[in-house]
Image (cartoon, rainbow, N blue to C red; front, side, top):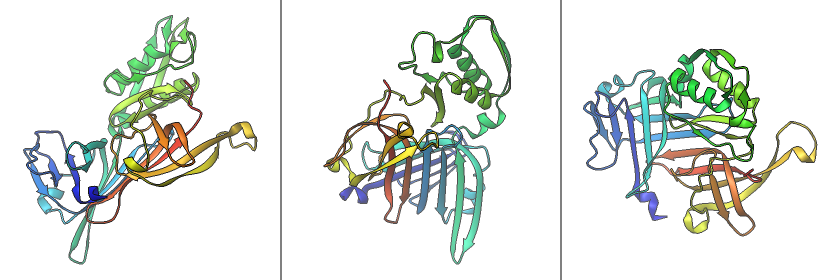
Length: 305
């Protein structure tokens, strides 16, 4: 538990080497030509999920920022937040844009709450009006919309077990036209072809429903930072009272670990739970001067290969 005394964080608002704001407790960190403040108390809650209709979100509250620093935080700015421990255990755990910023005074304390959404600006502004020629595949259509209409780099796409003529490989023999909100078009196209999609730290990921990114993460066990034991539960995917619709999940708590991410695979080792699972939801929660500095995971079994 000595890691609790080696907590590290870095919050960058704005692009690197621009007149932005850097708040950090990492020694000798200098990545902004703007304002830098060191070792301020902050609380954060970062929530990520594989549900298409829920956005990955960060709420970061910084205490006693200077007026000059507060003035540097504006809606739509890029936000990069790293957290972890001393050495090589500090990773980027959120990348997105500012949705809202609000400051208030409580006694002698100034609290500045920054609410951020992953993909906030691209999704809000993305619009598609395109005609795709005959024999275009789902993959071609998705890649075009994601890169040209949403402005992301090439997405990570996995077709898993869907086969040669399904999922990303499905062909529109006579072509197709797509007009409207880009994110809604992607959601519809994925849903109709047994796929799911997400924006994960500034990157678009697509894989089959009940599939995964195929990224395998380090073992989770008591010796690697797991707190307590995994808690078993069941969810009903289709809101029907049928056993075939029930899916077993586990809630797992660990010390803060930035390598965990949605859609990735983790192996869990405990007294009663052993196996490989897909991360479907996670919450990073921290309080620099408080007790919280952990990650809560929800993982699902029965990953399709």
